Image (cartoon, rainbow, N blue to C red; front, side, top):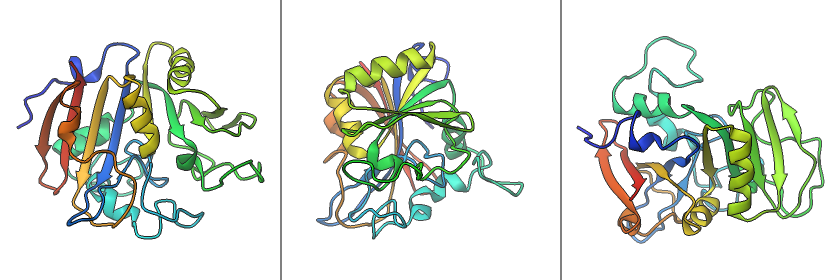
Length: 247
C-alpha cells in the first residue's frame, strides 16, 4: 500500500506547481535505461518522450520500441481515455491514469515529442503526431531552436519557443492561470528541467521492457533522493510507480 501524500496534499503540488508524469522503459543487462513520457496514441501518460534510437514518422518511439508494450498498464485501466469498451482495471494504475490530466493548465514538451522533423521546419502543413483532436486540451509549449507560428487544433494551441527551461516555465505558468504545468518529455527536456531545479513533483512509471540503447533519465532513481522525497510502489500489472516530491 502506498503511504505517500494523497492528491489533496503535497504530491498534487501547491497551486501552479510544475510536475512530471512519465512512463519509462527499464532495460536489462548492460543496456541503457530509456525513459519516455506519453505516446501519440496515449495522451502520453504524460508525454511521449525520448525513446529508442532512429525516431521516424512511422516509429515515434524509435525502431526498437512498441508503444503498446510501454503503455499497456495504462491502456488496461478503466480510466484510459481512449477506451471504447466497458470494463478495465481499477486500483493503483487506474488512479494514476485518471490523475494524469488533473489540474493541468499547460504542457511543456521537447520538439521530438511534437514530431520527427529536425532542423528548420520544411513542412508547416504537418502539425505533429497528435491528430485533429490533441489530448492536451491546454496550451502546449514546444521547445525548439527553430520557432514557427502558433496554431490551434480543437482546444489545444501549440506555441514554439526558443527559450531556456526557466523562461519556458514562466510562460507556461502564466498560461496555466494558477493550475499546474506538466513537463511531458522527452527525456532530454525532463533532465534539463530537473537540472534547473524547476520540478516540484514527479511520477515515473517503470515498465520491465527491454529495448536496447536509448536516452537515460537516470542510472538509478536514488540519484534524486538528495532533492526529493521518494517512494516506489509496485503494481500488480508489473510496473513500478516512482513518486517524488520536493523536500
